Image (tube, rainbow, N blue to C red):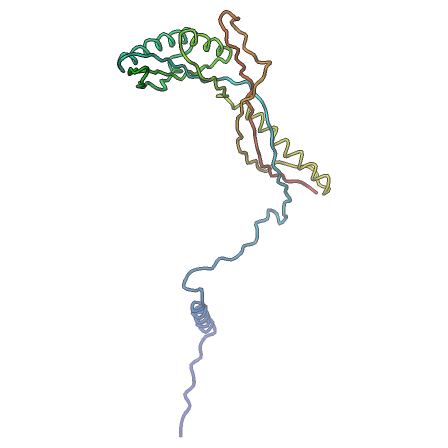
Length: 253
């Protein structure tokens, strides 16, 4: 006679643990498993459970400022039968030119040698050497540009320029940026009038500095020093500073 052996009872807690291990093993064998989690789209974080409506507009502005710097180049030439003599003669003339320029208050740090060269040429069957010396001059008082040009020319130099610029552009750019943000705000407020919103608030500003373009302005003719000191009329004009800003606004309906 066969006797039945009673099966041992497995506690429910142990059974649940075994089933959990089996389930994890099955999941590990699924495609995309192997310990690497797959990217999933996460819901957008919403503060307080409420989406905050926003508007984004670009604003532009332009301001004009008087230049505060001018750059020009003065050069001297001399001819001689040898290269050494030609360069020496050009250098002597150039020293006289720079002395006249320095006498007008130009600092040594604002003088930079641009070139020294000797050219060989033929003239009436003879070899002639032409020495050339040139210096870049920075003038930080635009009212003195005409006097500098006159003095250099009278000392025997050729002058190219001046080229006006705005070295200290922070104040002008800050002004242009504020106007650009105001332009974007005006667009946002006009949009809100159409959709029934109110109370726009700036959330972020992304600015992109613009360019500078020199423009002539007859009203800025340099007259300081009188005709006896300045025989060359010079017009510094205006420097145009642009600002471009993309502004994000929050608003209330």
